[in-house]
Amino acid sequence: MRYPEGDRHATRPDHDPPPDPPPYPQPDPATQCDPAWARCHYLDGAGYEVFTGIGPDLMTGARQAVEGAIDWLGKSRNMPAEQAYMLCSVCGDLRISEIVDAPNWVVSFYPPRILFK
Image (cartoon, rainbow, N blue to C red):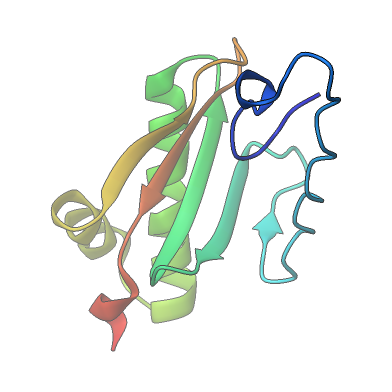
């Protein structure tokens, strides 16, 4: 059983059963994923747009995440792909989100929303 806030067994006495985990959050309607779930776009509460890429290695996941941001900038902000690429190269965080589910490496790209205000 997975616990979102870590394993609580270490803090419980041996004879007490672990408490039930809190329910996992439901998907946000703002989430937009392609049918193959290889690339997702969703809003982060911290003021970022978030694009994810899932691939057989970290480079493929990173490429998909940044390509998702470039596509989104072109469609939502009417930005040429070259300008979107340059913007993504200087502002945004590329993070490794998951490496434990080999071969499905998840990489996320976080451009801050303040760029678009």
